[in-house]
Image 1 (tube, rainbow, N blue to C red):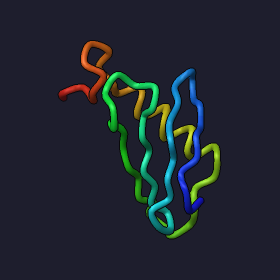
Image 2: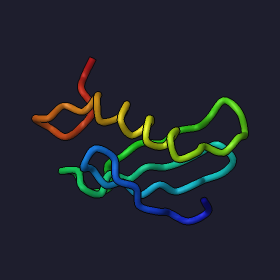
Image 3: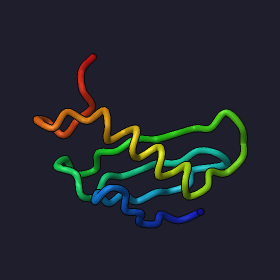
Image 4: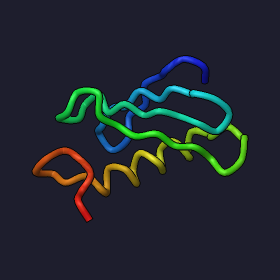
Length: 74
């Protein structure tokens, strides 16, 4: 993936953009905070597959505070 593409996970929409081998940015399009999202960098240079992207998004969403739409303070 060299350009961003949309994926939908559990009713939420993200743009996934590959930054380099094993590195991706995820912008949460349907979230309450414009431009918010997360990035991942794999331990290897291997590219992620569809299931990896979905798992990463689910992990991110599980950590969101519903009151703020941002990651929970720990």
